[in-house]
Length: 426
View 1 (tube, helix red, strand yellow):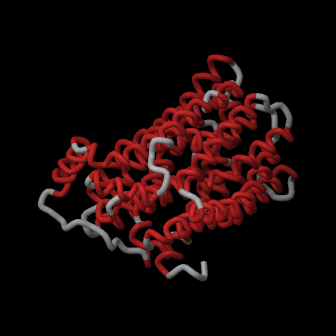
View 2 (cartoon, helix red, strand yellow):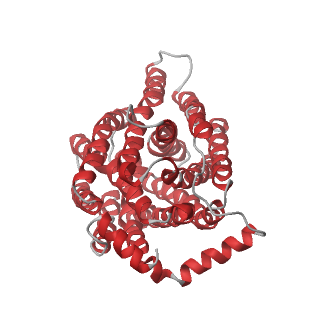
């Protein structure tokens, strides 16, 4: 961090802020809280897992539809920050509202969570696009990896507080139950996310943009359609995005549904929370290591290595039986989940024209979010059809294989990509 300037530090710190949502709401407390409420209402374990997957799919579908349109509009000077603030506010408000949903209303909880996903994911589109505004190409891998690394460490603080509350509630050390402790955790998450977003709001501004036009919304749709019509001119970018579409699907699905999977295997909720906490400390140095490796090798090689690890994870998950197996699986996931996301983000940042970064990061998001529609739904369908969650997780292997095959068609180095991109008119 000492080698980063103020804008780079402020940008990276937002990962510290919003990762509290990622681990508490997306991966741990809320999925377990939801499954407890749904199961107490008579919903079968595999069915509640399927509904959770369907809910994530609906929310991410909404973001996927909005992202490229709003991203194209945000390329106009002054718009990127406005959209970031809008979605950040949406995410903060609905995360706090999770705390007031009645305990028997599991469907309402699912709907509220959909809004938190829209807010979180929408803000992330513009946050990612700001990467080109805060740093140059040479430092992009380092800054992106630093952001993810900070996210892993920063998220552990509110996570430990939340775990402490839940464990204290289970042991009777506090005058309220586990349900109330979970609700407090949602409020803590919203407060943490909001406070540490302030440096980003204060110090990061849009530097690369296009000049505003009359009727910007209509013109943005025209620009978006022109991009699709001239897709050959952006062949390198879209080939990478196509690969990203498949492999990031598996990554996001494994992250989002890991606790539901562990719960179906009979692992206690407190054990799942401890495993994921330890995983955060493993992911922190690994994200930084991936940033260093990408400066020594090509970004493509680092991503392909991660895809190979995730393919092995899917195979291992099929044979998962014991708590030790889940420990091993979780640590393998944490060893490369930050790296593959960080290098993918910076790889794209070097490929796209900076003045159109929001538009292309909108496509980046739509490819990722449409993938996240397919992944959870795939697990839900396969799990329900076979009656085994193991089969659902194993089915994700197809996505990693396809993503790896497409990525192999992308130029081996960023330098070669730029040369080909210039020839193609990017």
